[in-house]
Amino acid sequence: MSDLRVALIQSDIIPDDSAANLTALERQMAANCPDPLDLIVLPEVFTTGFHPRARQHAETAAGPVSQWLARHANHYNAVVTGSVVFNDAKAHCNRLLWAAPDKPLQYYDKRHLFRMAGEHERYRAGRQRCIFTLGSWRVLAQVCYDLRFPVFSRNRDDYDLALYVANWPAARHDHWRSLLKARAIENQAYVIGVNRVGHDAYEQAYAGGSVVFSPEGELLVEAGDQAWVITAQLSEAALRDYRARFPAHLDGDEFSLVID
Image (cartoon, rainbow, N blue to C red; front, top):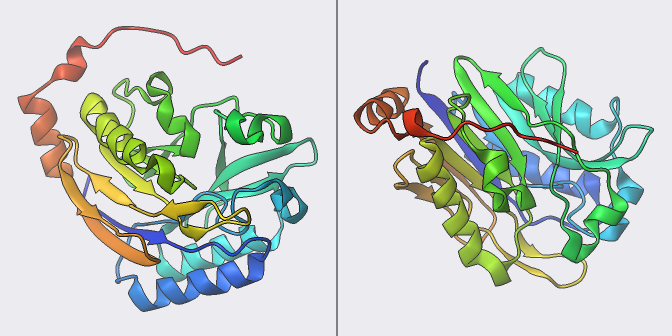
């Protein structure tokens, strides 16, 4: 393993305007992303925002957003990831796309759908827990409401970094920060959370608060409530040292995760 250089892109998502959102993200990245980087993380549904009409702008495998991600992964020589509303010809899903330089797109479909907003009625739930590799780092990728389900995030000595992309409302901002910190402490892993800011099509407010926590739950960097880019360097030496000094993971309970 080597240190991981990451950038968190906290954006104000314009409803129903994919082109405008991609242009705004390009400007944020060009103005604020240092060189070199290993990982660039965008929010949940970063081209549409989280609302029922988003399915009208669903992405496909050869669509413009997939091409945009691949192009920017090559440009920055870094993985670029975030979720979009996706139509795979069978159903709509909330799909996190993982674009690595010069490699085919990989993906994770959001497992836990936010029933309080009817997401479970409009989208198909994912059926796999996905861990991607980035160099020698193992990265668990999840989406928003997944954060509330610790069993699905449980580290079975199979990942080093958990990342959560979200449209997490300001009304539950304390939950966002507390749960991210808890996931870091209980799983002895780095945790990244990337949220949006601004207001959606229904005037729901979002407070940002994109953040990186260390495996000990130490706050490494945190954004405010404006569109912004924050960066961090994750230390593999610190991760290994902490797990060696405090090997609580060796006493974890054995279990099987059943996904219906």
